Image 1 (tube, rainbow, N blue to C red):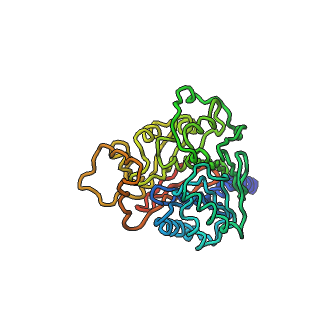
Image 2: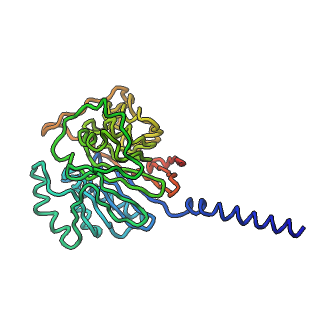
Length: 370
């Protein structure tokens, strides 16, 4: 009898010890990612389990700078941060660097990271880089990153995979196989600055995600063809607002994300060609959007549960057909004002590869197990 009880106790202890690491990984602090609504610009905040922070971009310039900085600060406060350890500005377009000065006046930024000089001359960007930017990083650290660099963050592997028009030459661990989607690739048109974007790949245990800024189709081809240098990811972030100058099959389909989170606006991004590419991506389970896109209409959109911000000045009947994209130029009517609060999409990832995505507008969340 005593021997039987002793054996039972030993077996129970062995089972407990075997289960403990798995239980520990599920209850340890997560990697939190806030995809912040800056009305079709970009601001994505990463908070590591150790409490270190990485912010990618600061939203729009001009009259929207204070608004977007304020929205970023709300996410920062929600995350319990007292400083931003690293700020990556992916490239020098106003919807990516616009809120930087306003944000820096409200919270300490310890390191400013970018790809180097602007290659698309423009009055706003040039003036910012000459007059505003140097004083911001004068009392901090300024780093110009190259493809292949590693950004130190405890518990995470953060790799720069694109910067200043260059891509990594060697594949990431586990990647490097042939990319079948290269055969049907069609080049696209782009401006000069988007292809300079700083793009990062982040690993946390078994969880993998990627943010490529506004990297365009031709650079996507350089990065992913003839061999896929990135492998696969769990979550694809950003997607260049869902614009068709990016988001080719050679990157979206080859990465095989289970989840994509698009930083679109009401009338910016979510374009039909991109939506078709994303929705047909092998293994995709869900697309989450920061905004309902009028450019998608009901034809290409996702259920409202997955959309953080809806349409202001909503029509009595939402048209099924997508709305034509407004042509660029000074005579274009401004997008409708976003009345009321702006909502983020938050992702919390565990080391075992599982993660939960939450829509702050309606509280809807979904967990993806590894």
